[in-house]
Length: 220
View 1 (tube, helix red, strand yellow):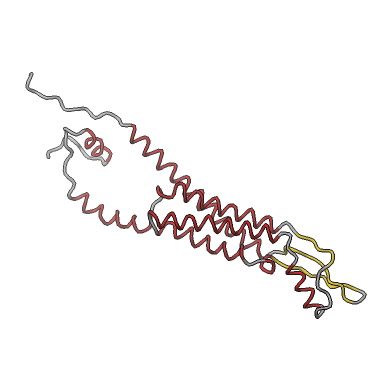
View 2: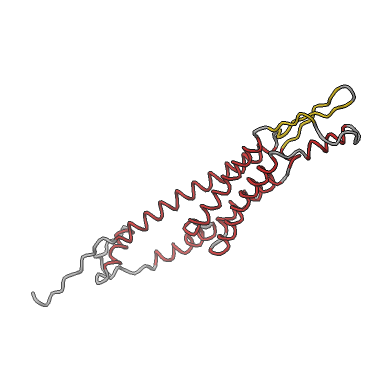
């Protein structure tokens, strides 16, 4: 009896719970970034095509109504929204340093779209130019200038893109990569065929075998 050695019983490890929590957090942050980035870019593109400013140019005894949409005022928000969409997709095609750089580009695209839209909310240059063209240069500024809420909607949507970029910077290292997925799947088949039996003297291998649905006490 004294010569029989007991097989060590594997004990639960906190690393498994921590890894599961990290994976769950990664999935949540990934879903949030995709939602925020896609919705933000879509709203920026939509709002940029709406009327941002209205006014009138005096012509003789009357006046000519004028209006300018977001792209007349500034084309930056729409252009940066397209860049942000491209960066959102590219996040999953790169790894390590490349992912950090693309995530930073996503965040900067959102910040630039928000800032340019906010600055354009009080801009009158587009309507002034329309007034000059309409009156052949006799009127250089518009009267009764008013601004709509669409520039602020655009700015808020730009902040959503910015938030998506910040999430990518913070949690992107735990997100999957397109190429890596297929590499793991391709290598997984061969690994499963050649996988050795678990060593009963190593508890961590017993737990891994149980997780794979294998019998760790089978013949070696």
